[in-house]
Image 1 (cartoon, rainbow, N blue to C red):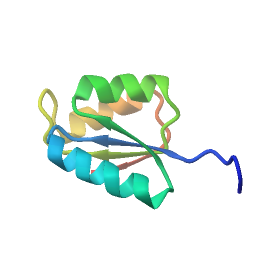
Image 2 (spheres, helix red, strand yellow):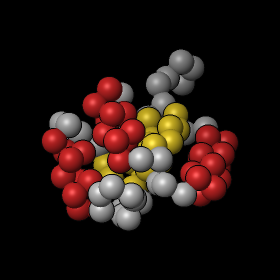
Image 3 (cartoon, rainbow, N blue to C red):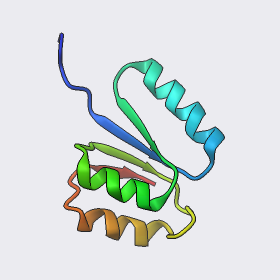
Image 4 (cartoon, helix red, strand yellow):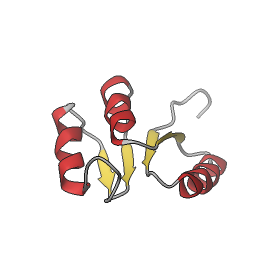
Length: 84
């Protein structure tokens, strides 16, 4: 469908090389608008300000661990999916 909006995907990982490789691969597939969030703060800001359908979340990012991060994400009224 021409002009259709692609679902937004956020890669939340503090390993830069992994973020770059996943971003390149997922963007090339053409199914997602991909954004990287290398910190928990950037992830939470993105969730609060963007329409996000999927978050690929590193379980051990600096500043907050998996479940704590997920709870903070849902405090932002996130209704998408999280892949941990």
